[in-house]
Image (cartoon, rainbow, N blue to C red):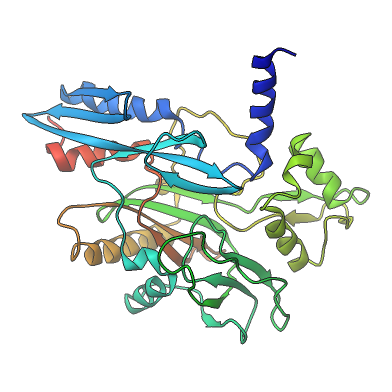
Length: 357
């Protein structure tokens, strides 16, 4: 095998070796960002140039110009995170923004967001002391990102199998752990520029289907192929084991024929290969009426709060659970999320004015 072929093989395996792919294939494809910027620039007669030394984008239109800072999705020591530098462990491009990293309490502290959302009349799961949950629950640290500082779910009345790890770094590294009501439903993530919702993902829990003879482990190998051997034993395996234990299963259990076994409830864990999709996968306009109203309400509430701190619109995303009745239960707000390519037109309209006739 040539060195180049060996690197290609290692790279293919490493896509799975630390964590299952995130549900962001369309969002994290660099060409989709370029397409969106080009489409707007062509329509508005704007100039756009990219500086490959720092990956900054400069856009000029209507006697104005702005520089946009890049951000990347990276993975190190089994953990996903965002960075503004093109480091060796960067694995995807996640957008240009006209400002750098922003922080605020609603994003840094999950308990602060829950209190804020409840006061605004938004639906949030119940929360209890970590040692006194009163229903099916998960354990959470008040800080953290990408769903790492979570364990569970656990059945009502049962002791937790493990405690959430401390956040890797940053404010709140020693924050308290609390129990949160476990709400079943589809993972929902909605993106906003200012108060305007412009993109959403809805993700059902990934499932395996039992055949009455194969173990969960064997079914997982069938789903993931050779990469399953590398993935099992990674930092993601405990989350899979929590999900199975909640269903009274284990990796070596044999589910009954046709039994659906779900693998994870956290957003982005699809247990499926990436799809190189050049077209928007937003489901915002396909949301049930009640859920869409919930999205608009949370966007208006958060944006109004952020106006007290920032003089101009900023990007944020809110995570929730969409239950079987069409109700959204809100979980947390992200201050520095991935930018879906659909958002550039909204950002450019703020900076350069509305689209010309």
